[in-house]
Image (tube, rainbow, N blue to C red):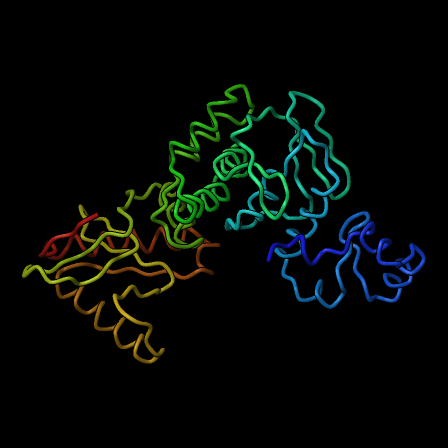
Length: 314
């Protein structure tokens, strides 16, 4: 069921015999929560929502009263499309009007002005929303590089779009002041990144001047037996990088203790095949120099030993 179904509209409440005074009383006593002018949620329902859920309800509520030439856009469109966002404020509902000028920002509402074509608009929960490709393009133009890559990677992985779709969307407005920045972010996006942490790790590699790795490579031993699928592979250096110690197995889910055991066996097999394995966790991404130094040390250690045996496949 779409989010528009749990929003209480003032007009609908009045039709059911609830007066404006009663609405004020319900809000004043904490029974209803006002998400936007003329739009409410039961307070208990609102309290159970996370930041994304609350923004989604506000965006849908705002969409109910927006102009016919406007559509939800930027982070609001990303939320409605279910895209991952990292370190990106959700304080304002973002809309774009289909015109070249007239952008305006008011408390809780950021109105952009940028032309869009009919094929760049879709319907989500009854609201006009800019498409996934256009949304990723808009965020690539306006968000910092790392945040834009996180959302773009997730869109490529889950929404069936390609880098070409994003660059095509960018090409429709080459005069946008963030165009060059957007193209750079789009060309770095990779749908093979399977988490926010992996996307941030890829950005770390390029920002810290590390060799760029292959992502999601499959490793086989010298006898052709499958060993593992790894997050990051530096084949010229004999180094494997793994984010957050996540294990990638084929087959059904297993118990935590079995997972730990399988991970140990997996890493032993990789090391037996001559690979040097280096790991980092989410918290360490806040200090990228620590991770970068760990990777560099792994490259130095690997250079002292024999080359890995077996094969790999990107």
